Picture 1 (cartoon, rainbow, N blue to C red):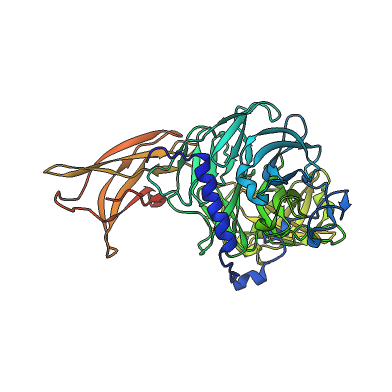
Picture 2 (picture 1 turned 135 degrees about the horizontal axis):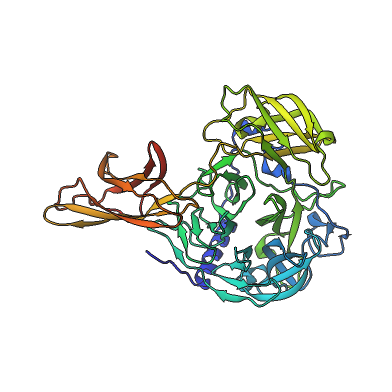
Length: 556
């Protein structure tokens, strides 16, 4: 399969099927790991949610008693449209633009009118709203907007995308091209989310948890993974959102079957680790006086980022009842809300050498920012630093001493218990401000390569003569830097689980996005059923380091 294009109606029907299933299926209460009971404040992503903002607190509006009184000026709502989904970007005009979808509240199907939703550009002078309609862009659902390296905007909707030079200008509709690269597409290509890489290329996650890369964000998205990157649980996943900050990549995905949203992190956007604790739960929409907006559903989470890429606000599509119970001209509807997030501190590790279990001391710079003075605002001896696996459970390095340098604070930690292994890419700080609130932050390790080659193969193509079976196989570098010479091996796995080497060869050094085709002789003797029915495994290595492994959809 070279190109996989699905029309809008196919994807809408696919999404409708999943929506219906999710409402009718029996929801399970997932048994969470016992060790989560020992998580420190700041370990869970949901610990980052701050109090909601707004000025118009009102009960004179639609909704069940559980969502009143509420800030009607938070996000966007009215009695004309039922709003859903969408993310915010701050544009060159200095305004915040929420690209949101919606359908007429008076539509005969009520909430089930969503397949006929429109996408709107709405604006506000602050990120929490109120947002006001500026222009209608066109038909579409579950939008996400991102900006290309050439400053054009791409607005994704299920089944296609719009492109424009100006958020308030004209938008041209088109469709993405997808190349599955001999890999299974998990749950179709809907509910996509995008993150821009350093060179202007984009990494994308689809609903099923496959990872894709486009060289410029508009050209063909090519699938890199051959399985989902989500947590290894029997979940029903939806609504992934991905973003990159100055440290690492982040992802949140919701498992509606287990009623839990998960938080993941990655060095390169390809390989992911799952952090413990819930990413979000009901009860996060809280006012300063403790009043809660207890929405029936929180869906379609999207992230607003600051200039460092840090997450500073989460936006949700919310509804006050079951979707099927939202009828035209009734007391129910849906809207988009924004909840501020604790962005975390800016941190720099001063030491250049590798950190191990033998490291005696670790020096960490905590950078001052507008409204934050690390020399005065931190409860110093509450700080713990090290691998997330340690710090999230209240362990990690403790403070030895501090010193001031300009407006910044240099904290020296005792190295014991740092937990940092060779696989670590973003050690974490957790502690408290003097006012008792939680603080946290991530740091890069100075000796880690954060941008590496990403070598990825397609399925081998076998050809047979009377004398031999040979094969050709294509390898491409999806990384942003040139690769070194690597080693590729093709193995087969028979029904008994026995593995055997089929072919191997060297992969030349490849520049970013360069590809090569290897012609290899195999160890297989010609004859009927020589490798028929066996599973193929392709592995690419740099010395003993495994760069990638791949089980092609196309088997021998």
